[in-house]
Amino acid sequence: MAFGLTRFELNKWKEEVNSGEIAIITHYWQDNRFPNATTVTKVGCSDLNKLIEWGKKYNLKPEWIDYRQDYPHFDLFGKTQINVLINEKKFKQINKFNLKTR
Image (tube, rainbow, N blue to C red; front, side, top):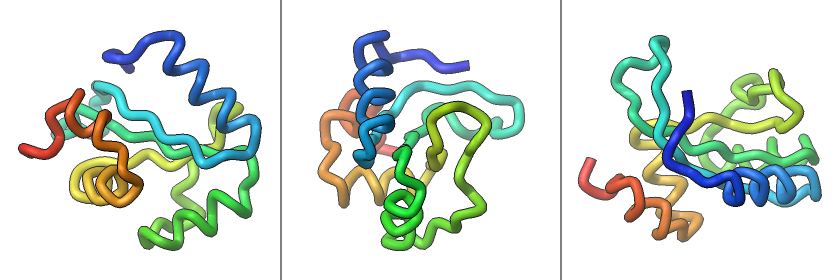
């Protein structure tokens, strides 16, 4: 279950993914499969080669791409999530979800 983002933010992320951009969005998240995760960062792009190449910078494997929806993306948690957000200069997302203190 996702929460902590607006419909506008979600739609903007979807538009960026569909246009072939690397799109990054963070939101609160609850999933029994990941009981220690309270947030997730989704990094998506409809250009799979571009997404795979981007993922290599962070040692993300292509088989980790989530294809279940119309928006291919990596789901990032924990240290990887923080590392990506810092390196991609997504400080607003870090601050909004208090991720720098975790």
